[in-house]
Length: 306
Image 1: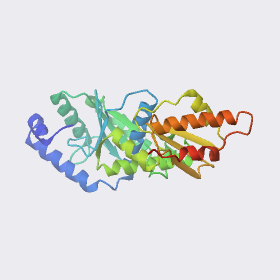
Image 2: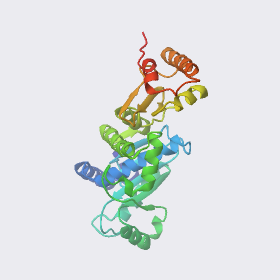
Image 3: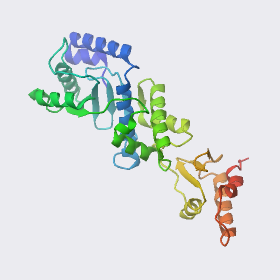
Image 4: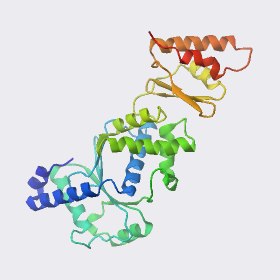
C-alpha cells in the first residue's frame, strides 16, 4: 500500500508523524474490536464468494489491517483497485468534530493516493443506521466519492445471522455442507485463519488455512478437480452420504454429519483412479439390488497408496 517514507515525500513530515501516531494507536487498540472483526470476515466471505461464483477473480487479492495511512482500519488490494476502509462502532460521528476530524483523514488519504497514482475507493463503515443517515446529510461536498455504508455490529459467530448477505456468502464458501452449524463454524475458521496471519495476507492463503482447519468444509480459491459425470452420479446416489471436492481433496460426510473425513489419496492420483474403478464395479454389481451405502464405499476410501 503506502510507506511512511512515501507519506513524507508526498505530503510532508507533519503528515508522516500523524500517520505514525495513528498507526500506533491502531496497533494498541487492535484485537478488541469485535465489530471490526465481524466486518473484515464478512468482506473476506464476500470476496471469496465472488470468486467461487465466478463474478470476480480474486486470486491475487491481498488483505491488510492497520495499514500506513489515514483511512487505515482495513484495506483490500486487487489488481486494479485499492479499497481503504475506516470502521466505526459508535453512537455518534461527525465529519468535522474532534482534534483530527475524519473529513481530514479522508482528504489526506485521497491526496496521498492521487500523488502516488493509485486508484482507490475510500469507505466509511458504521454500525448504526442513525449514524449513517447523519453522515449522509452532512457530507462535505469534496468527499462525495467516499462510500458510506452500514454494517450491523456483533460478534462471530453469534451475530452473523444479523447480516443475511454474510450468511449467503458463507453458504457459498461451505457448499454443499451449508447447514447452520457449518455456516457458523465457517465464520470462525475464517476469523481464526485471518488472525493467524497478523493482519496482512493474500485472500487465497486465509481460505487455505480455514479449509484445512475445517476438515475441508471451507472451499479455497484453488480450481477444483472435475469429477467424471458417472462417478458424480454414483456418489450422489449413495444413501446418507454427501461429498465435496476441495482442490484435489475429496471430503465426505455421512450419517447426518456424525462421520466425516477425506480420502487418503488426491483426486487424479493413482489411488483416485483405483477408487473410481472400484466405485464403478460396485455400481454395476448393485444395479439390481439395494442402493449403495457408505459401508460399501468404506474399503475404497481407506485404501492407501504404497
